Length: 354
Image 1: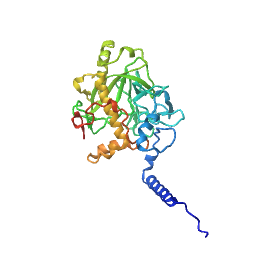
Image 2: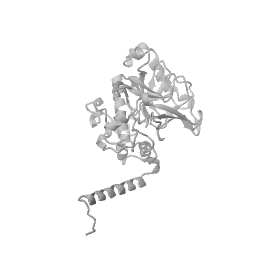
Image 3: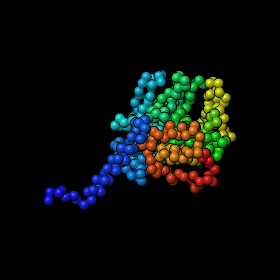
Image 4: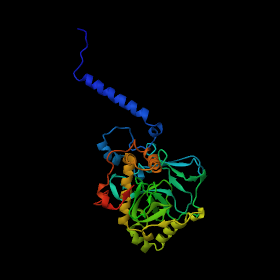
């Protein structure tokens, strides 16, 4: 008999293989090309892992300041100018998604008491640089309006300005202390008050000191006050009252900057929640943790999947950001559960989601 023998189980194996091939052919022919082109790398090699292992992969794949290089593209003072973060291997990484919120020790890779601050605008400058949240790789660019590059008409800013990575102010979320205003759809803003000039794109470990609730054109726009952990002032500043004690006038100067900086553009002064008071470190930490959790919902796709009842403007805001992240992050990303308050995420927490 010349009929070839087939080992038991071979037919099942072949069928399973065909199913996998068909699945991925359907997947990669239905996903928009612009989504597949996103270059936000969490790991240095392409690996398929179970979703349950995603949290550990994210911890291992996140970068800290010492791991990041910067490459400039385009000509300065043009619409094409970009500052792109890259890994040691030269691959693009996102200053928003791929830098860990919590600072990691360069040698042990263990979490430290500090957070990572991404600088966008250096102190004593006025060009309005920002992370391009809607571009692949999220480089830093100079903001523009109607084709013209933007600068602060008020003049040079006198503190380092930037954001915390892996945070997001959800435009469907109303904080109970935000006077009914939603989040501004950006990473959380950070004001660094140290003595050094930090270049755009640099990632620095910082100590959280306090927070100010600014209301910017009807949106909640938190401003977290921090100090570079290696600054000469850092040992003397541990909470917001220390800033007033050691640097009298600093907090009021920050508040007045944000109150008036849009007036030269013909806009009214900004206003503030919480009686214009700078809240302490404990309050600031809760806001940071909330916005980190919102970022987890964004990049895992959970936020987009819950948008059915929202109007189109909000849907477009969220989708323009989440599509760039869905293929590099997913699963259970809540890796800082120890920071949650007892009622975090519950209906009685006082916060509202639209």
